Length: 212
Image (cartoon, rainbow, N blue to C red; front, side):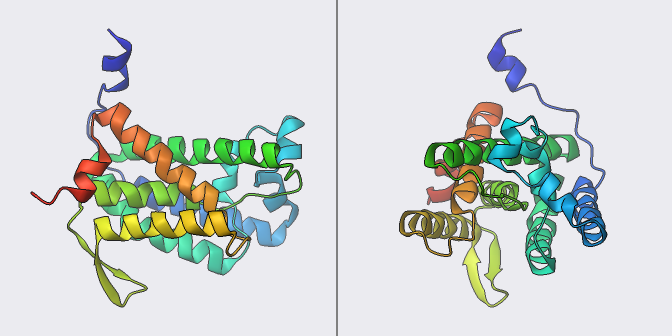
C-alpha cells in the first residue's frame, strides 16, 4: 500500500456525538480549573514549559480557557459547526481532524513564540481547532447560510474568507494582541492541508466556485 493510499484510507463511518464529548471535556477542565487555578497554567502552552518536557501542552492547551466568556464562545461555535461537520465526516474522522489541526496549530504557534522570543506567552483555548472546523463547515456546505453575531446572514464561504482576511490583517497590524490570531490562521492552514492530503479536495474550488 502506497503512502498516498494509506493517508486517504477512510474510516468506516460511525457517529457517536464526539462533539459533545469534546465540549464536555472543555467544560470539565474549566470547572476543575476554578477549584485548582494552577491547572490552567499546567495545561496551557508555554514555550519555557514545553522546553522543560511539558510536551503534552501541544494538545492540552486547546482544552483550557481563561474564563467563562472565552469558554462559552468557543464551545458555542464548536457546537454550531462541529455537530454538522461531524455528521458529514463521521465521528472518527472528525476527532482526528479536530485533534490534528488543533495540535499542529499549537506546534506552529510554539515555533513562532520561540522565533520571536515570546517565552512568557501562554496559549490556551480551542480557537485553532475551531477555526479548522469552521473551514470544514464552509468546504462541506459552502452555500449554507449562517448568521454572523446572530444577526447578519452570510454564506458560509463568505464567512470563512472574511474571517481569514480579518485574522490576517489583525496579525499584521497586531490588533487585539491578547487574541492568538496566528493560531487561528494556523488552524485554517492545517485544515486546508488536511483536505488536500486526506480527501484530495482543494478548498479554494469549493469556496469560490460559482458553478455550484
